[in-house]
Length: 304
Image 1 (cartoon, rainbow, N blue to C red):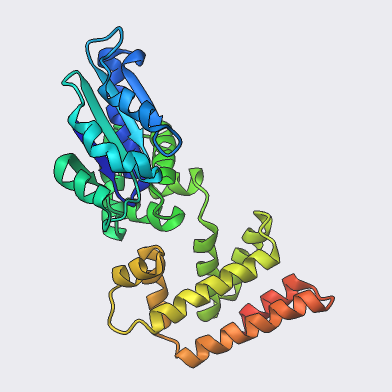
Image 2 (image 1 turned 90 degrees about the horizontal axis):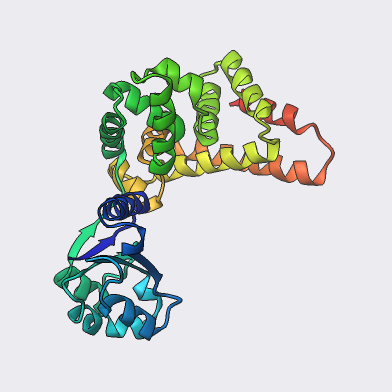
């Protein structure tokens, strides 16, 4: 077997790689697995690993990472693969592979090529449901969506949080999510901005105080507000593009885009630009004058 694991979804790639390695070790022992970083290895070392017979075991697994990072190995890899004996299985790991390269074309056509794409918002929610089942837990689609909105779409973090939640109670609920997970700061800042737009003064003050209690400094809040306003501009100027299209082009979470679309519908581009301009003035003032930045930020938000 010559398998290639590739794609921008690094969690998917690494999860599959761990599954393969653990299964191989279980069946053949630790000595049956050899892992090589091809970007730092010599041409002869890579060739020997791929073409030599197993030692003290009937078969072996060679994990070869970052062939693309070593030009001489990349140019010879086709010849090395041809010489791999039947007693050796090979997994080539190339997370970010240039699709214009000859290496990509060879691996795509001559190996068992598995590509792991980044998941969109809906796929992440479905993945949370599937992963919860694998952990012997249960979660409703609504709670899965709530969890993703709360902590983001990073699968590594989601997997860690799911393991913790299932250990606490196999039936994951919104209550247990609130109890055991920390809200993504950028998501909290969006809620802060949304409270300002909706004139929810009490909610605004509470959310701001929560940020400060989490040791988020005023300058960090300014930076995150700036980022949220930047997203609003992207959404406002995106025309008829879908949330997933905007998210893909801007390399941001689809959930962030969808939440921002609600606000963008109620604001003109001029109003958003004014908010950015006023925030910039506040930022400059904080660095050139002696002011109480907490009070100034709260005043900025209340003025919205």
